[in-house]
Amino acid sequence: MACDLETARITSLPGEAFYIADFISEDEEEYLLQKVAAAPLPRWTHLSHRRLQTWPSALTKSNTLLESDLPPWLTSPIIEPRFNSLGIFKSAPHGAPNHVLINEYRPGQGIMPHEDGAAYHPLVATVSLGAPIVLDIYEKNANEKHHAEQGGEGERDHAHNSRKPQFRILQERRSLLITRDLLYTEFLHGIAETSRDDDLGPHSVCNWPLLREKDAFLIGGYDRQTRTSLTYRDVLKVAKMGNTLKFLGVK
Ligand SMILES: O=C(O)CCC(=O)C(=O)O
Image (cartoon, rainbow, N blue to C red; front, side):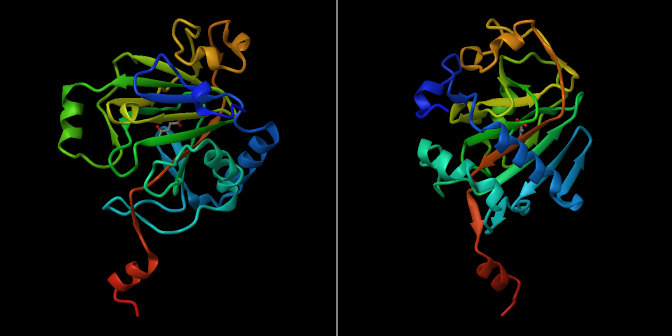
């Protein structure tokens, strides 16, 4: 695993992005996939093109997280020691992620181009499990920039996607991708609803020099298999349980 972020920087991207191909071991990947699978069924939210778990809980309507610890399997070894020793969240308000979304994509599934919005500190750290997938990055159009300037909050899908991505990031299984700052605020990201990622190579994949298995992708494409992502973020507004109970009138 890279021991400093600078060697993991994706230099061809605007803003800040880092890619570490071997962030977790095969055993750790297996363990995490077992824990995701072992979560009780009601933990899953079924969306039309993927399913999702939210840890420790979904945000309230005002984008507030009710304070609660992440479970140990999402904390160790990913946050402690690895994120902490790389200093990934050191400039975030809580100094560490407090929220994890787990997305599962079967072949043919994806996520529309969207921005994660103002509920979070502008930094996402994504651990990929099970199979590779391509994350597409789009520059915002004038309307989308306007929405952000008006202080639009929350995660937001954008109109049907016929546009071409400006950048493509190939995320291998067991990798870590960090996107932050401009890349978070000025761009959208999405995953194509396809059963095959094609046209891969140094000309099209912006993190190509940092990949672990370039040879496997040199044939230009692969058939998708089920890929699970753990996306770590710092939610800005956190309500202490005591205050919430007071608010509800519980003594
Ligand atoms: O699965 C991924 O890598 C992307 C997930 C995503 O875009 C999100 O949770 O907002």
